[in-house]
Length: 511
Image 1 (cartoon, rainbow, N blue to C red):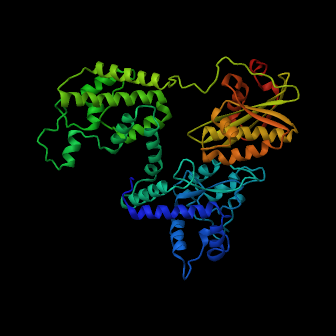
Image 2: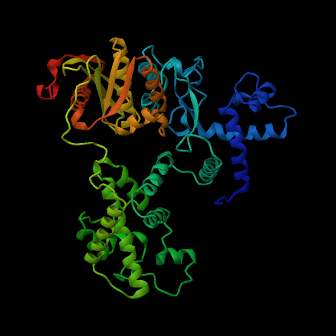
């Protein structure tokens, strides 16, 4: 089953019962336990009973685990304690670590939210560190009608499972025995995601995973495992000059260097200053300065795999290949995989027709184009909404600076801006257009896999019900140029701005 510690597995199973009690407060079991053990309604503050049942003792054990590994999704902020609850996703521990000012009460998170449902940046800066302030400002607020919801951080769907609970406890135990830096802890999940989500055959993903764990069976690895009891020398089979390690075989051996230079990347990795494979791969996937696409990552994975295959052919079959042969085989394998799986190497399959034109709405309907300009490094965004009628005439334009945890979240925030502005302008029939297909699909299906945007998506669906008619539509970027231009143009603005048609380029305004 994959479980190596039955004690932790037992705790993970018990914690699932605790999660059900928390998430289903109206169930019979929850009501019975609440009446006996936590009449105040807060299971996390339940006092220790003098004679608890076996079931309640297990649930109390699960409460400790759920409390550590879960956090609150901010809706209206009324149920979340600013200082004692977990609610900040981008900081270790999910909570504020700065000490509250002396005599400062423990208010709910709603006290940090202004009446227009934006964060009170000044107040947050007074109470929190710069890192915490940035993390809080990037959280999207649901709104007055959106409830705060407890979510599990260890699962993509944000629901607790025994498997995710076991992994959480196992990771916690590992960190206790071998402390890691906060940066390593935060980046580890992203590292594994970049390995397992890359579009290559499963055997190559498994090979990348082994490289990250440094368990590829090279001669130096096997010698270390068997405490030097190997008869063969551990020299590189290509150059015979250095010890054979995974990094030498794949990067630093003259044979590997020649293969990289022959490839489309013309890459020459240097041994001096090389950070190790896990960090190198993480930087390759997440450093925007390197400009690496998903297709480029897949090509690199194929090269690494074929370098390893060339080493095995030489060691076990005595067959020596040239660097050009290795590169050509890697490139051929990559192209065949792309064709068989129908992967679009241009990575623009969701952008729609490039030459499509904006289409006016029917008479009596206002079309609202929404877009966002997002800076990944700072977390700052500029969102915009442009209103036009059936004669293609400009009706209204608005932009707002904000913080966001991701580009998709900023796009969702732009849609919310369009809806709230349309409500203030008393429009009854509207069409919302955006060039983010993922957000549109979530709003249409009602299924959201991104907890960071789920609260604002819930708010968007609530606002949409206030209109006589409201629909969401995905369009290509060429149909959304006006909103895109305004979002980028307004990046320097520090407050909400309403724009007149005179600021827009005429070729965009009337296209």
